[in-house]
Length: 218
Image (cartoon, rainbow, N blue to C red):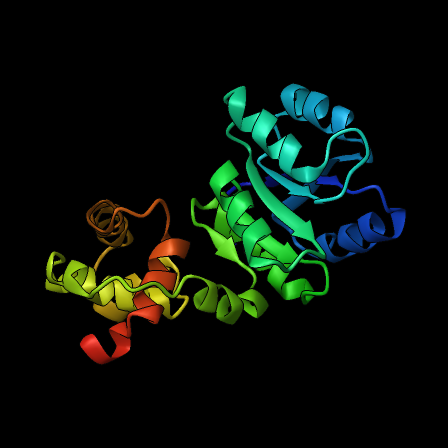
């Protein structure tokens, strides 16, 4: 559990969705719902005023759609963690959300545990992709790049990348390698820079599509 309360805002124009999410999150001692919104214009105003830690944002909203809201928030320098919560499963729109600055992407059919995991992950500075979408995204990003980038990584960085490709969090990787979580975080920053990718989701996709499990097994 987090050391502090995670302040969450829900933006979805369907009351049944909002009520369902609120019911799920009400069981979490470290999560508090601070606002709800049903309109894209109102979302931006409330985020600016309330500064929630995490925004659960529907892709389809009146006024502004989810991607427009995300783009506008990032354009004005807002650092609220944003999880797209949607029915959209297309690889292109997922990638667009990532490019616009989304911290997480979860489909509405996901288990309640996955929504809670996504909130904790992005709050702690990680990126989160719905597990049901991972295989599809891997196929989308299969490219004819060679594995020379792996040779630019240290053994420790390769080990960490391997665990990232398996969906491990920084804390879980630290436990596997018997190092501090800070050490893992520093190495993740370095390997992302060397690989020239913007986040761990893209790093994981590259690692899996280029068979890191055959290249290195810790």
